[in-house]
Image 1 (cartoon, rainbow, N blue to C red):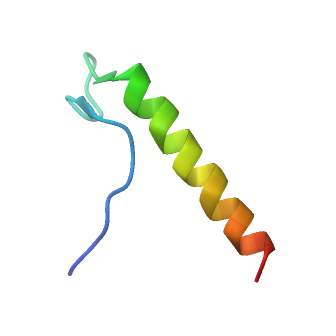
Image 2: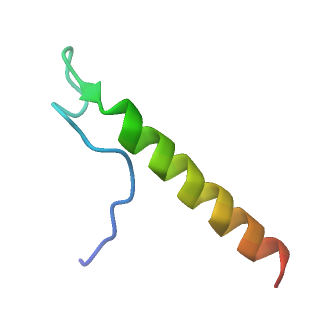
Length: 42
């Protein structure tokens, strides 16, 4: 089944040594904020 994954860059998902890039986390937050703002305008 096709799927879209949207989130920050990182590695070792759901493991003890999982990590995430903080700069990509900021970029994702901006994307979520733009998406929420667009929904408000519908």
